[in-house]
Length: 68
Image (cartoon, rainbow, N blue to C red):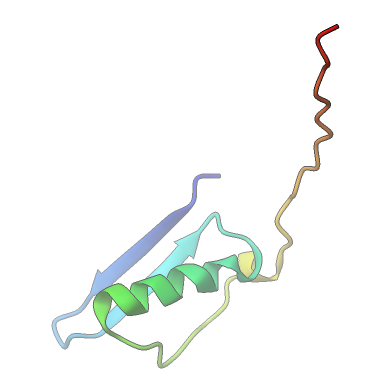
Protein backbone atom coordinates (compact mmCIF):
# COMPACT_ATOMS: atom_id res chain seq x y z
CA UNK A 1 0.00 0.00 0.00
CA UNK A 2 1.18 3.49 -0.85
CA UNK A 3 2.05 5.75 2.12
CA UNK A 4 -0.06 8.91 2.25
CA UNK A 5 -0.87 11.74 4.63
CA UNK A 6 -4.27 13.40 4.29
CA UNK A 7 -4.43 16.95 5.70
CA UNK A 8 -7.64 18.92 6.21
CA UNK A 9 -7.65 22.57 7.28
CA UNK A 10 -10.97 23.83 8.62
CA UNK A 11 -12.31 27.41 8.60
CA UNK A 12 -11.64 27.79 12.34
CA UNK A 13 -7.93 27.03 11.76
CA UNK A 14 -8.13 23.48 13.07
CA UNK A 15 -5.94 21.04 11.18
CA UNK A 16 -6.68 17.33 10.95
CA UNK A 17 -4.17 14.85 9.55
CA UNK A 18 -4.51 11.15 8.88
CA UNK A 19 -1.87 8.70 7.71
CA UNK A 20 -2.56 5.69 5.52
CA UNK A 21 -0.25 2.81 4.66
CA UNK A 22 2.12 3.59 7.54
CA UNK A 23 2.19 0.79 10.08
CA UNK A 24 3.26 1.02 13.69
CA UNK A 25 4.60 4.08 15.43
CA UNK A 26 6.31 5.40 12.27
CA UNK A 27 3.21 7.51 11.61
CA UNK A 28 4.18 9.66 14.58
CA UNK A 29 7.36 10.69 12.73
CA UNK A 30 5.16 12.18 10.01
CA UNK A 31 3.05 14.00 12.58
CA UNK A 32 6.17 15.61 14.09
CA UNK A 33 7.20 16.84 10.64
CA UNK A 34 3.73 18.30 10.08
CA UNK A 35 3.87 20.06 13.45
CA UNK A 36 7.14 21.70 12.43
CA UNK A 37 5.95 22.70 8.96
CA UNK A 38 2.60 24.04 10.17
CA UNK A 39 3.98 25.55 13.39
CA UNK A 40 1.31 23.63 15.28
CA UNK A 41 1.05 21.05 18.03
CA UNK A 42 -1.02 17.92 18.39
CA UNK A 43 -3.82 18.38 20.91
CA UNK A 44 -5.68 15.13 20.27
CA UNK A 45 -4.71 11.87 18.65
CA UNK A 46 -6.62 8.76 17.62
CA UNK A 47 -4.80 5.65 16.47
CA UNK A 48 -6.04 3.61 13.54
CA UNK A 49 -5.67 -0.19 13.48
CA UNK A 50 -2.53 0.33 11.34
CA UNK A 51 -0.84 1.95 14.34
CA UNK A 52 -0.98 -1.37 16.18
CA UNK A 53 0.34 -3.42 13.24
CA UNK A 54 3.98 -4.28 12.77
CA UNK A 55 5.74 -3.17 9.64
CA UNK A 56 7.10 -6.01 7.54
CA UNK A 57 10.86 -5.75 7.50
CA UNK A 58 12.70 -7.87 5.01
CA UNK A 59 16.20 -8.95 5.82
CA UNK A 60 18.37 -9.70 2.88
CA UNK A 61 21.79 -11.22 2.85
CA UNK A 62 24.04 -9.62 0.29
CA UNK A 63 27.29 -11.22 -0.66
CA UNK A 64 30.00 -9.37 -2.45
CA UNK A 65 31.56 -11.55 -5.07
CA UNK A 66 35.31 -11.42 -5.38
CA UNK A 67 36.74 -11.15 -8.84
CA UNK A 68 39.35 -13.85 -9.18
